[in-house]
View 1 (cartoon, rainbow, N blue to C red):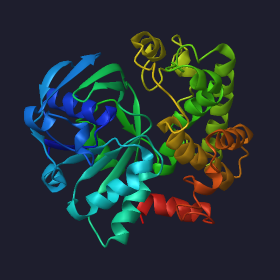
View 2: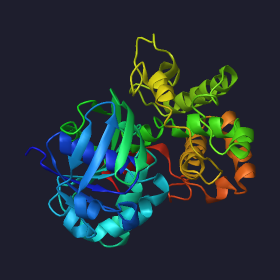
View 3: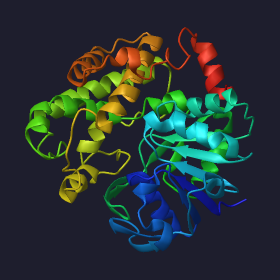
Length: 363
């Protein structure tokens, strides 16, 4: 059956862009957020504006509701591009309303699929659903008003991991109706190691602590990305790839060097011009602090997860370990204790065969 109904839950950059873009693509879209004040008069007007690259213009969303059940009932795909640190809360709210056959599409890989499945199980919900996570968001986008976004990039190659992995083929076919650039990878652990948010943002924040504290706003992707900063990012990324190789993942590793190299024979997820377009857009000049999602999501959730997967794989990750320690000092939090690690997820101590079984069959 073709996809017709899409639910979008969340109120941030990704949610607004997804709702507008999918409406312009011809789908019937229903929006919901846990923070209704984020939507302003959208509940009355149903109208938002997309600017920048791709499909643009004023868009009228079919449904903007305060009722989560209304938003997700009968939806073929539920898009939840909320930050990783919100996933347990979103899963708990969603659990009573999910239906057999639905695909839940999350933000970039962080074992969110496992968290959703475990939360559903803990609440006694036994539904035949799949949870899919991309290697990055389908869009480079920023919310410029409560009803407006500026899009500076679209994914041209979008790897996706599905939990449980036995539902990969059917889930990927359904999601490709939304985003033709999607392709499947081995499982949720593989996609967690394709999320480069913890690679780039951990380095950019740590090496820009002075400007972040000194200036009212700062663009870490422009002035903050110097040649020496790139060297650390790329060395950090090579550790990520080494962990993937140690676990036997053979799907494309998406080395971050391809993001910076417009001449690379292998375009990165956002294509060859993505970094240039991102800098030109000037939409990443923003007020930053050490509670920004670059820390609370990409370090506390995703970098902590990377280091623990490295331990599981028996592969040393000295750069990742150092970044986690130093950023913990800056943010005044022990991310090894509080972060999203395999141990804190209840997956610590497993052997590789048992981990593979859980990733394939589910909780």
